[in-house]
Image (cartoon, rainbow, N blue to C red; front, top):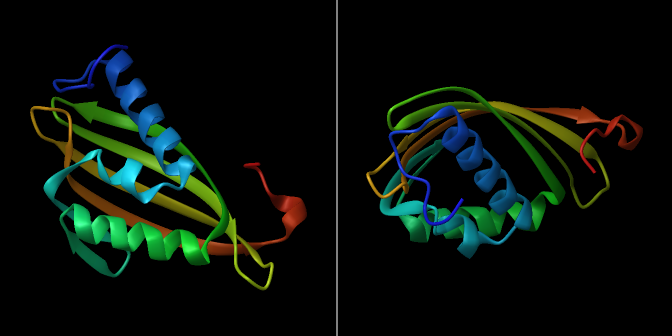
Length: 136
């Protein structure tokens, strides 16, 4: 696909948007990820409420400092016009070497340019053994 992926979404463009998000998050580059959001994007991520790219960048920098070996898989669950529902799971380990798998759901809303204006995420972590990892 050439250019930004903009709403209204089709199945093809919705799947491409989810894959682009997965690829960006797996880069673990806060700047790259933040550019997918509007300047005033609103987030709910667990117990944190963020507003704007600067807060998103800072959040992601903190996240990937403590969530080491981060690897994410996203799956489209549904879409309509400028909104999507996505499920995801990712794995990471802490400084002590304990692995975790995080499970969650996200609700996304995009502006007319295809930038994410709102992201609401519900996430749960479960400790796992390294031998139980699925995402390498």
